[in-house]
Length: 323
Image (tube, rainbow, N blue to C red; front, side, top):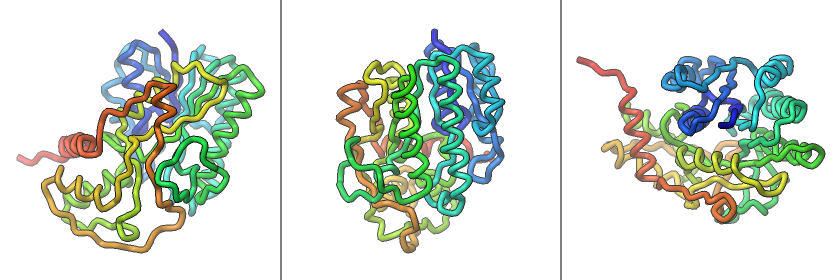
């Protein structure tokens, strides 16, 4: 079977992907810096990998994509068939306050990885991009052909730049790249600061749920299992040397509806406080997944009600048990 490098493999999406690839019999090198961050503690990342750490074919490479020497050592130690690049700093609002750091990790780190991928003869790289590249696009349905030259946050700039770097390497070298634009991924292991996790926790603790704006802004909430299936399909894709796909549910959900769905799953009523919209936030829209359906065979299977129920089940299982 193939040997796959997954950067950011201890994170939310990454750990689910590593788990899936191991289950298919692949050898997986999980590259992660395991940095201890308030939004993503080291202990949580290690816990994400707990069930996989002893599995055959699992290798953990702890280090940073900004460290070219470390990356070169990893690539020299393994002959990879493919790379899935998920490692990045995420968060639109956080990027506004940390422009330089996002450039260093998301842009320079991606360039470092592409250079090692090219230099060691790897033939395939899948890049985790974001729907944030569409900017504040008013269209209700966003397709891959939309303009992406008007990003409104440093995070979006970093992802749009990553796509361009992938195109550049595919154009100039024997490296096929696929950029996947994720739309608001949620599910078990999601970071605490993301909407579904945050709203669930606040509701559970009887605290106010803060909604920026009037709650009518929409997102396409995509279940993590569907995203993993899309990544798997992208690894097998044999199309043009560079291509881009949306990975979404194909249905927009307003913040007000999201709160309502979580209320039903939790069996509790939320106390909602409305605040002005935040810098860098976009109105959002649903992802047009017709291209991914036609060329990747992508079929999202989990709707928002089922997905939130699965998340809440995971959330409650992790709560302390008192005798």
